Amino acid sequence: QVQLVESGGGLVQPGGSLRLSCAASGGISSIKDMAWYRQAPGKQRELVATISVEGNTNYADSAKDRFTVSRDNSKHTVYLQMYSLKPEDTAVYSCNGDVRTWNGVRRVYWGQGTQVTVSS
Image 1 (cartoon, rainbow, N blue to C red):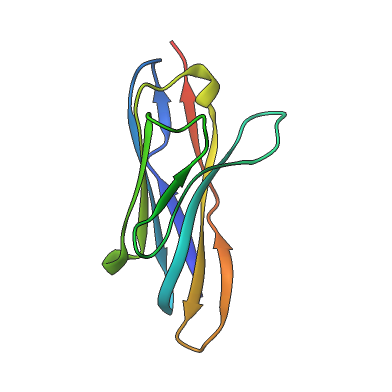
Image 2: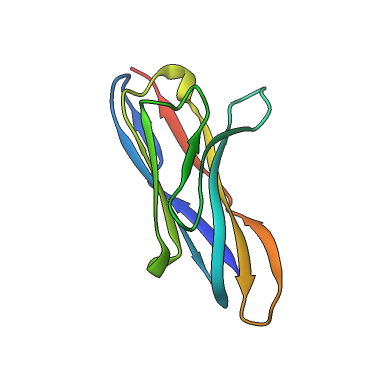
């Protein structure tokens, strides 16, 4: 059974950095696009960054120049390095992946999310 598990969230002061990880496991043949989303209290979920299997990336305007998405295909893992964090970055960060399993099924799977809180 495919699972995506995020880690690396926590409490950080404004201006600080965090690195989030999202590891996929469970009968995976390949993963195409992977993405990070976030949802702040009372707000809709928003796309933060995407990365293709070839490593092509796209960022939300709020993430450009401060966040870097990367992946390790051999580990089925995607990362989000966040710098210069602001209080408005506070949210639950979730990842997803366009997964193909060994039995030929292809669908998008989501992780449960990890809390990032930016506060002094």
